Length: 149
Picture 1: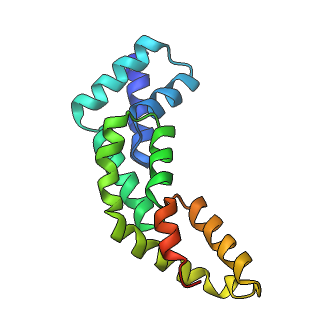
Picture 2: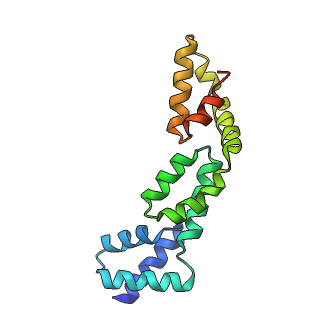
Picture 3: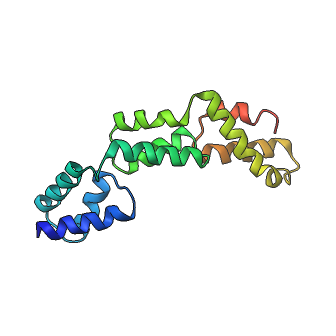
């Protein structure tokens, strides 16, 4: 049973990196008990196949590069079962406020054609604000980014 759980864990991790919590949930869904799941997780960590810190940085970097702000990155990492300290360390990839502002402006520039269809400038700013807020940017960054929209 332990060998089967470990083999299953290897197959899951071969597809993409997972957090400990994600892998545990997947193994439990496949019918493995808690002790067997814990043993497989421990062995995967021991072999270096399961590393929450590395996974957090990788996911955060990917999201930040895809135009998501720190609030969205934080929420996504939290949903993956990572603890607060790992999340805070991973958020470094989102950069400081100036970096976030550049990212928000870049994303807004891609959306400019669609936003320009709105003739009312107030509604256009509201749409831009909602869009960037949905991407996880904080309000001060959004306000600076949409200053000239």
